[in-house]
Image 1 (cartoon, protein in one colour):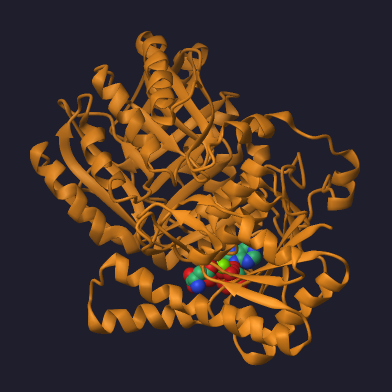
Image 2 (tube, rainbow, N blue to C red; image 1 turned 120 degrees about the vertical axis):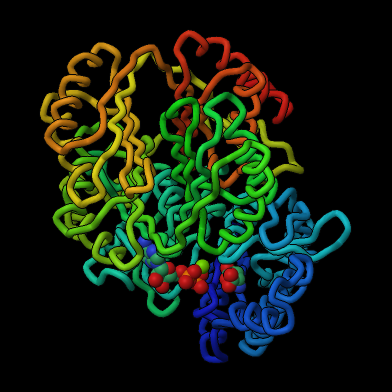
Length: 598
Ligand code: ADP
Ligand code: ASP
Ligand code: MG
């Protein structure tokens, strides 16, 4: 008998009628001959109301008590769902996270799952029960109640599906699938039939709230197919699987993180170890940073900028205060009135001009880009918050995301062509039973020698980034990493990008022409750099990855010249003559941390 996991989000169990509808779905699946495990969220906006209640008695409630409070929402809904099933004539048992045997670490409000003991669930299922699991919660080694972070019921569902070897994991929600962007923001967004784990992982991490990004880490590691579909209709939704819908489309989705904040640490010494002290303080609080830009040093000093979720800003400012002081930084600036617009697509890894297309679309919409970072399958731009919706619409349009790509495949076609991929099995065999959400690495590699070009004093108005990369692209120069960030008090930015070393001279010439045309301060280029790539699953949300990298390079006295992060890769650019040594040390450091060879 096959097992089906069905997860119901808050709106899908918001009132008694919806609870009965969810119960009927589960009973139907059971009568079709399946064992059914439901995972249920708190009713409606109950979690938000509890958060609000907490803030009324304490502006900064202790994290442990927050988890104690928030977990009650799911305890209410699972009991009601069990009662509804019982009333409809089937057997049901509800279980809290602790009763389910979901063990987590003790990072309250964002705990990670360590292990799940499946016996009790199996026994109850074998006895003919529909088992209803409380989403989003677990217990730590001291039996404290923990929660997995907002939206975490998706992660409970996929983790249970993985551990129990479920045939399917259905996510019932208030949209009928995954769209090219949030359909509430852009009505022209298109529902996709299929999306790959890698794309969904990036999109979720960059703001597509339809799935909790950590649930996709589980899905990818354990090859769990996810079906996102509507609670209110029976139409087929979206399959999240290993394969993409299209291999030709450069972009498959766009996402917006509306409430982003930028932090800049001004005037820190441009020597190895600077980034380490700043980012390890942030990582110690398990806060994921994005869009890290360290601009090229002036007279031995550099500015480090990065973005975090605006919710984390206060916490981050507190975390960096001490390292900034001890580094003798000239100051710490922040701007919490910014949003991040990103495009994601497996296809962009092998295509040129994707970045300039995005920048041109933003320029034509009159959007001013404040920061840029790219990585192999995503490009992010930081924009003023009041331009965010316009920016999202512009990029959605530029990549024609409202239309299906010409080579779009349906889930049925993908199934027909499917062959099992072996590397997932190797990955899973390496996972320890007590470390389900541990960092999973897939490789560490070093590139050949590259060159870096930097433009300083890039004027602060729309269209400059588009001009720069269109001109470079027009010369058939392939650009790899791009970062743009804060450069000076006048609002100007610097743009750095990497090219093949063979293209260095030509790139410098082009950059100097751009520099003259746009009256920038300078254009410089230098060869002799290399990129070290650490690949895995959930690289950004496992905040220790950047810390291990920084620590290792700092201990070897190697300066980091550029960095970019995504959920799939963290890339650092360093001097090429130190690359072999750095590679060896990084492999050793990660092997030590994960306790196995890489
Ligand atoms: P649930 O309570 O069922 O977990 P969520 O509110 O967490 O539901 O997620 C569903 C919502 O996600 C949708 O209503 C939609 O507005 C939003 N969303 C954001 N990005 C996307 C996207 N790319 N595709 C579909 N929905 C999205
Ligand atoms: N109830 C929790 C929340 O609102 C978990 C979830 O719904 O996934 O964040
Ligand atoms: Mg959700």
